Length: 484
Ligand SMILES: Cc1cc2nc3c(=O)[nH]c(=O)nc-3n(C[C@H](O)[C@H](O)[C@H](O)COP(=O)(O)OP(=O)(O)OC[C@H]3O[C@@H](n4cnc5c(N)ncnc54)[C@H](O)[C@@H]3O)c2cc1C
Ligand code: FES
Ligand code: FES
Image (cartoon, rainbow, N blue to C red; front, side, top):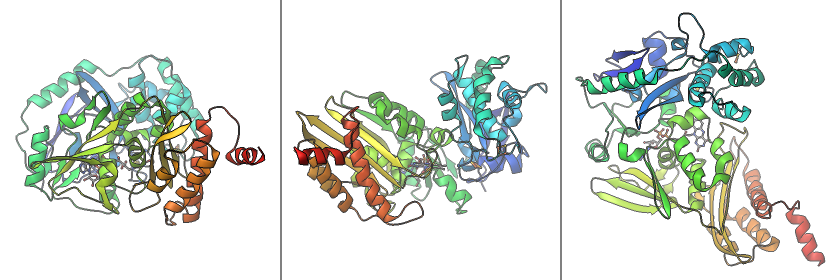
């Protein structure tokens, strides 16, 4: 039995709950314990957005609001935060602009998805202040919400018109004061079943003290083990409050991304240096998942179809592992020893991911092949980084996902490129090497043959993109070369 009190701020009041089980999800807490059934359960796995709620935290003196999936979020993880559900928006029976715009634009039919859409709209409304809202911005904000009957056009219209309605804003100062007051009041009923250290030193000590505790970050993988596999966790060690690990540190030649940095922030940091990764970043899950999940969790989880690892391998990233016995740094690809297995000892955590900055001679791209454009897992992911100087490949670094038991480096393909002139013959040789380097499996996402074929096609696309606006295909260039 968990005796640790869970406290959060809602409608200006501190809600204090005791006896909330360690692995209780926020959605179950809302619907079953608090009888707030406005928040819906669709998939229970972060895919549909029916369960979207908004949480608020003080970050650097400002209130930061984020839409998240309550179905895969552990209730205790919002301790000390502010919470808004769909029941909290209308005031004096007057709809919030996000709700009113949905009514005005006919954005709801059966209504099941509507509370989730409204909450994503609410977070967008608060974030975008009085700026005019672009269609793309609205689409990005709603990327984690599915509607099966209305169609998206009226919902996107609602997103673009809500700001024209009479303004209703969250009273930031009042929420910040409430959060501060709650933090100052001692939580007298602490126990050790949900551990949420605030410093790196405490995290490492607790990791050593409780090696069997389930380590969690954003819980966007672990949450599914709870909702779909019904796993029980007597003790949880949540690293998302560790202040050192919530930072992105910028150095001359690399950036260091803390393991507790959310995917949305980690991608923003990577994009500063390499804006060409933007569409890939937007295709990683949907916004509510990126608002909870961390880059560290993606890397540590080690799924062979995880998206960030092929990219990080290609960019030459290192990981820093830490424990009470010290720290060590290794190449990201050396972290993995087999299917979802890694070299991390039971008393270690992944603390930082170090990513080299770009250099002028770099040409890099990452390609994700999945059945759905947004919010879907890759069948294949290919990331390439070349340095090109005087028409020669002076450096080749390639990461691949979906072709082996772990994310991997394409060593043979790199060798086929290194030192060669960057031309169609070299590309053709590299395509052949890439297609023969791995023996992918067939599964529900793609057949082995498709994966092999598409890898080569992506390398061809990379070549074409490296040639800028030239409208040509590799085959025609090869033919031209043969005719010359
Ligand atoms: C709807 C949906 C869509 C998704 N789409 C994608 C996608 O497009 N691409 C993709 O790659 N993934 C996707 N995912 C998977 C998931 O979101 C990512 O893997 C995410 O980065 C996991 O991070 P997290 O912080 O939530 O990890 P958690 O779920 O908290 O943890 C995952 C695992 O990593 C371990 N762990 C976490 N942090 C550390 C650490 N610092 N040190 C040691 N171990 C640690 C945990 O113990 C656990 O075993 C999706 C998930 C959902 C639910
Ligand atoms: S219920 Fe579908 S995302 Fe939570
Ligand atoms: S209104 Fe029915 S699912 Fe969206």
